[in-house]
Amino acid sequence: QVQLVESGGGLVQAGGSLRLSCAASGRTFSSLAMAWFRQAPGKEREFVASISRGGDNTYYADSVKGRFTISRDNAKNTVYLQMNSLKPEDTAIYYCAGSIRQSVSPRPSQYDYWGQGTQVTVSS
Image (cartoon, rainbow, N blue to C red; front, side):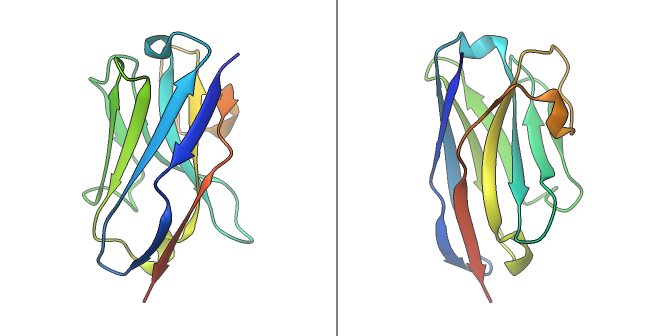
């Protein structure tokens, strides 16, 4: 079993930055592909970014490309999401997810482990 705990959310003005962290425990972190998803009120959970086990491959949703950066530190069992140039439409609960599958995926159903989420609110 894997436990994922997100942190770093908060309230920020449009144009500002936040860095989310997700700490993992319970399984060898380097064996998991990792991703960030988000869910705004009344909307479905959507893919934000993913990173391969070794960190050499990353993928982004078009809506965040060029503004967000996903990274991981396998020595610290942590995955990060650096969010710059934030917009009000980025407001959502952000979830960290882990997959035992070798390939990364934008589909929530392909992820085996989920954190509880952290709220990000961007004011205009």
